[in-house]
Structure formats: structure tokens, C-alpha cells
Length: 282
Ligand code: DHB
Image (cartoon, rainbow, N blue to C red; front, side, top):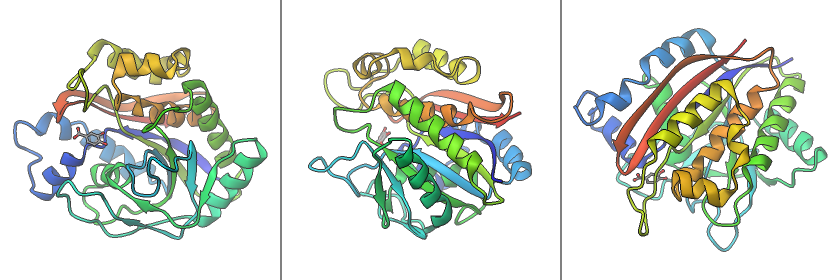
């Protein structure tokens, strides 16, 4: 059976791609962010996931404002990078795992999640950059991926409670898969930030730190908030923390709990508070 080995989460700001491309990791502005990764690289060297199920949000590449699925899952053999710009290099395609995708699709629909199935799916920085951060020495990370898109772009968004249930169902389905593989779950986006409007630049450090702590000690904590409350607390783009909730919920089904491998929190990169986290199932 498949083994759910742990979870990863990171911010996905496009400027990170430019910094990697230009080798700026050790510059004073970037170093506190990139310093969050080496302990996680060491863990990944040992943990060696074969497949990563990645919760992320599309930025108008597959789904524009006229057609916005709440949840969508990729079932492709490969995912081509076609980012919307930001001056970051186009990365090579990432290999998919259609077998696990179809297993998840069947299980989720049987569990009454009306998820959109995408046999072709382009990916943007929210999916590609985290793999450059977690596997910096590889042109293409040595894993297959299954992307799951959660709408955090246009209201109405799924509630935190619904996202938590989705994550849990994904975790259960991974554990029921008879592919003999090591599977990790990943979340991308966040933490608090607001890019536009009157509150542009808004960051909420105390909420972020409470949220990070809840990932370890009380995974359902954020489900008490409505989406509007999450916007109020974390900013309009900060609601991408819903992805972290899905990742963490998936891990609740494995073994007896999680061990924190490493976390990092740094303000600011661009207009955001950045967060990085790795959890191992125990
Ligand atoms: C930025 C952050 C994001 O999360 C995103 O998706 C796009 C841009 C930014 O800070 O520039």
C-alpha cells in the first residue's frame, strides 16, 4: 500500500523564481527566507517521496474568472509550466502520476466531492516554484506530482471546514491506494498578505504564528473561521493558507501524529509574510 510520509508547505511568491534564477539566495534581502530550507532538504534526502500531491491555486492559467471550479485535480502524465509572466524562467514539464490521480478522483467523487477532473493542466509559479525550493539541485524535482487546485482567487471560496474535509479525504484515499509508493502532500501560498486595495501590504504576524503553531498542535484550529474572517485576519491573498489546512488535514489520517521537521517565518518578501514548514508522519 502507499505510505503517506509527511507534508511540506511554502509561500509561492513569483519573485522567488527570479531570485533563484539570478542566484540571489545569499543576498541580505533573500537569505532569511532561503535559510528556512536546508534542514528540510536534509529530511527530503532521507524521506525520498516518490509522489507529491500538491494543493495550490491557479492564477488564471487554466481557470479564469468566468469559469472557476472550487476544486480541480490534474490527471495528466505531465504538467507544462506556462506562467503568466513575472520575468521568471519557464521550467521544464513536471511528470504526473495518472494512476494516483484517477484513484483520488474516483475516491473523492464517491465521497461526494464534486471535483473537476483535468486531463490536461498547465501549471504556474504556485505549483512549480515550491519544487525548486525543496529540490534546488534538480532541474526537475525527482518526484511525480498530482496537482489539486483550490479556488482562493474568486468568491465564493470553499470554507476552511470544507477544505479540511477535502484534505482528510485525500489523505484517506492515498492510504487506500495500492501503489507501492511513498507519498507526500504539499501546500503552497501564504502566509498573511494582501497585494491590493486599501489594505495592500497588510501582514498579521500574531495570526500567522498562531496558525503555524496550530499546524503542529491543533490542526482544526483555523476551521473555526469563515472565509471573510480569514481575509480579515490574513489578507485577501493570505487566504491561500487554506492550502496549508488541506495538507495538514491529509496528515491526520496517518499513524499517531506528526513531528515537525522544521519551520521558518520571515517578513517581508514582496508584500508578504513568508512561511515554510515540513511535517513528518510518526
Ligand atoms: C505575489 C504573491 C503571491 O502569492 C502571488 O500569487 C502573486 C504575487 C507577490 O507578493 O508579488
